[in-house]
Length: 559
Picture 1: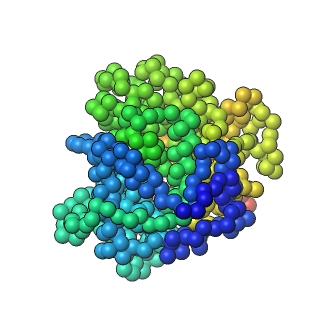
Picture 2 (picture 1 turned 180 degrees about the horizontal axis):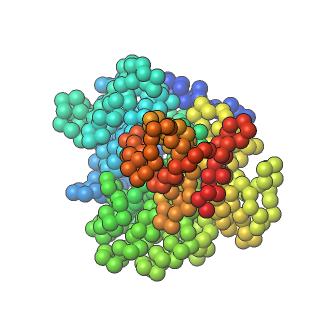
Picture 3 (picture 1 turned 90 degrees about the horizontal axis):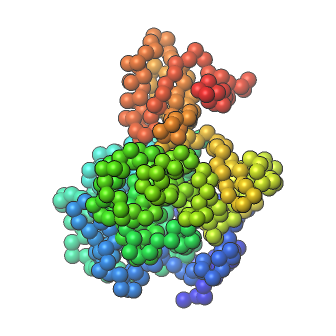
């Protein structure tokens, strides 16, 4: 094996890729738009060999180190050990290679709720040298079709309970053409061609693909202000890097901890908190297919969970319910996805005696880069820079502003934004090697960062990133809608909610029944959490002389 290296991986000679399918490598941004992924801030830790498969590091090596009989996943009705997960993932990897013809570099769409089989599929794809594209259970055909088109996906592994929309999306492209040779393989079913059937008789050992550390491991999609999802590419090295920064220096969990939470594995927040972080230290995780506040509290009580990952909205909702549950096992609470209001922090502490570890991460950066815990927590602040990263607040000319001044958050570290075939967004997100997150912040004299607002048109509601233009596009498909504008407006419970301003076509009457019809229409077309919880009918839309919608004026109408 070649000697390990750190410092500036993107500037070093390229290690030969294992990817026969070069799609991801061909879709990377050009060198001048690459983030500077720095490793020198933790030179003794963030050192990885140039050939690396993160599945082998997180799973195979943990079993080899003696964790085989330890529990890796708790779930309703049972548990899996690390060895069970390894053997299941290995059998699936054989299916991918032998029966489904996967070659290294192929993208594989995963669709299902949080459960051990979804995790096994995730590891199997990486073991076989594929690229994981994990999707949320709530996504509809329109959204799944876009992702399959954008990432050129020809294979999906899908929970049978969510089969219909996945099969429809994989059958036809967004342009209406048949998706040649595309295949959907279902699991959690006894069908003759199900994944479990194909796994029978397959060996429990699999020789992992010899991927380069810089080979793409996953494409995580995030909503964008243009209304289309943006694919962000993360390498095998990146997966380990996020395990070795925030969890090690801020969370400080150990092998006896039981992790739990509400985010789907398709959110990198959930992937880290429920799979990557616990498995890096030999701990276990509770995977809940349904994780609304009452179910999450019940899971904590029943499985004696010690570490919880969820959003501020959930903590607010759980605060009024905690008296009905035994939460004495809970030690650490993590919040991300939206800013954590000080009042929520204080109410949760009053109800449970526990502080919430706030933090900010992004799909583009893979996970957390600003956060603080224990005595370093300053309620209302996001925290300080996570070891391994650097951050600063800059003005529009990319000059660092004085402490106490509002500006744009810029960050760099061992991970960075690499959009999938999107030069326009890449050039806006990455500047001089720094990543501009789209957030406005103030940094105080002690180095704490205080969130102010989003700098783009993203709506963050109950921890979900929602693109206003995407919702607008759906509403415009309804025969009653002539024009519309969608913005986020403040909401005490959810942080923000989606509000739609709509100009009706002639012949349609504004009223409660039409509001309900429009809301149902959106829920049927895209993920239900994106629907406009408030709708206001207007006579016209505020626009510039060139016809551009002035969303700031719509926001002003709601304040």
